[in-house]
Image 1 (spheres, rainbow, N blue to C red):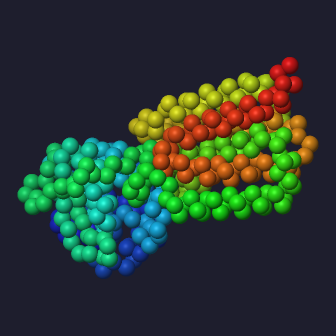
Image 2 (image 1 turned 60 degrees about the vertical axis):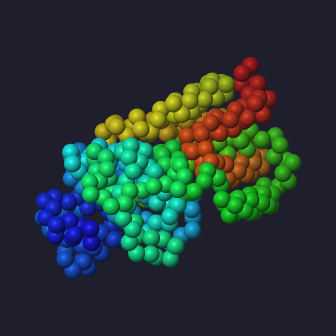
Image 3 (image 1 turned 135 degrees about the vertical axis):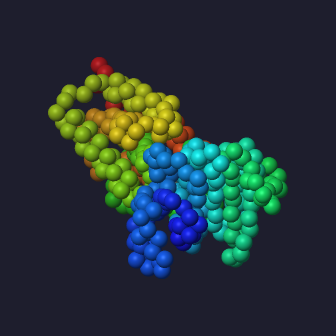
Amino acid sequence: NDVAVALAEGAQRVDAVEIDPVLQQLGRDRHPERPYSDPRVTAHVDDGRAFLERTDRRYDVILLALPDSATIVTGQAALRLENYLFTTEALEQARSLLKPGGSFAMYNYYEPWLVDRYANTLRAVYDTEPCVQVGRSLGPRQEVVLSMAKEGRVAGCQTFWQPAEAGLAPSTDDYPFPYLAEREIPSFYLWMLGLILVASLLLVRVAAGPLRTMRPYADLFFMGGAFLLLETKNVVQFALLFGTTWLVNAAVFAGVLLSVLAAIEVARRVRLPRPVVLYGALLLALVAALLIPPAALLSLPVVPRFLAGVAVAFAPIFLANLVFAQRFSSIGASTTAFGANLLGAMVGGALEYFALVTGFRFLLVLVAVLYGLAFLVGRRHLAPADA
């Protein structure tokens, strides 16, 4: 519909970005005005943020039209497809792509507090209040259009946004949760995580034996928690660098599995250095991942960005698996050891939700802490290798 309106208003070129190929095909086949068949239109199946980062074109108008992937789902804090489209960094990138005199607009059916957040984000980017136009209601939501001119305020606007108080803090690339009103873990999530952990404890107890037999493998427990946090961080980082699509997620999981396989083959064929050396290298890789901001990689072309992203994301995973492979090679009771590691992974999955309070980069600090605990608890197993 927005493409059809743009063409009707005389647009000479339109880039139409839709993340879902099925929705785009429906628009191509079913829309009565056939806007995607117009030679002035270039249709892209892509993540909106990824397109903004990759394009070298400049625009008279940039419009975020109804980018809401989960309107009937209550997951207030889940990382949805569009979360990285509404951060201050994304809106700054959109502003940089506007031609002089160009305009930016976004619209949807918003709840009032969400309008407050997005309007405050636009104020942070443009250093002035956005223009607000309110339309129909849909339950507790209202149809709202927020617009800005590249140079600031929209000329001729009748109503500018005025926050009730200071306004909700904008979301950022490190904290991309616009649908979470406060920095907290919702109580519903806490209850569900608690039930999952209890069920995991019971199932591991049945499969791996009494929990007291896992005490010698406490270091593997901490390794399991740290590793799952690493995997989570990589999924999020690649979603930012290359878009939130199934292809990107598949590539991340494939990369994790290949890193594990590479570490196993290296451990099988090469004499590994002392565990202390491996732990030290792992700590350095985690520090590098923490110090290199994602924004530094976003500015790179696609191929260098991919290579840098892989190096930053998968070096810790590879080294972590070398640590694990070296430790596991001396274990006799593999079922019990795996039980401890699996239980740790479930705890690590629960710790992932600390990102709703701290942001995603802090997860790397938790990873370092967990591997530090694995090192301290497992020192007696390291002594023979260090002798």
